[in-house]
Structure formats: structure tokens, C-alpha cells
Length: 111
Image (cartoon, rainbow, N blue to C red; front, side, top):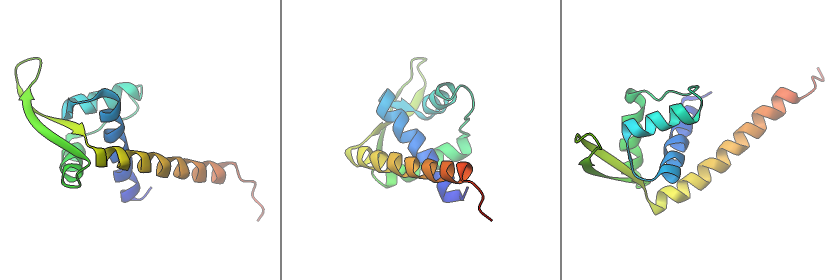
């Protein structure tokens, strides 16, 4: 997969997580993705936080500082209206990618 495809997948996972779970901090997003994928996907901090910054710069998410349940300060992210639109487009793009890969995997070889 090209790097942009992987980056787009991370965007999709983050945006979908925020759509499903609402306001979350980065660790909460990473944990949700890991648990929701039955431990198959792990999002590393080195990938997550630059992606969050980029998505915030794009206007897809917004952030604010708040206290966690344990009293630590953390940056919480939420989906914006622009993020909802980007999520819908990303889901469609992902569905098309999956259809394309599935078509190649199930195609009969005709030499």
C-alpha cells in the first residue's frame, strides 16, 4: 500500500472513532482502535499525534485541553462538520479500495 493510502486509513480510523465515541484524547483513540479491531490494529504515538495535528490544521477536528478521569491534563479532540464530510468521503474511498483489492484477489487469471 502506498504511504498516502496508509495515512488515509489512519485518518479514517481516527475520524470514525470520534464519530462513534465523541470527544476523546489521543490515548483514548488509540485504545479504542486497538480494542475495536480485536487487537489487530495498533496506532503508535509517532503516527497518531502528527496525524491529529494535520487533521486539526485541515479543520476536520478541533481540540481543547481538559482533565482526564484521573486528573491529568490532556488534549481532547472532537469531530467538526468538515470532519463529518471528510469521514463520509473517506469511507467511500475505502470501500472502493476494498472492492478493487477484492476484485483482483478473486479474478481468474486469463494469461
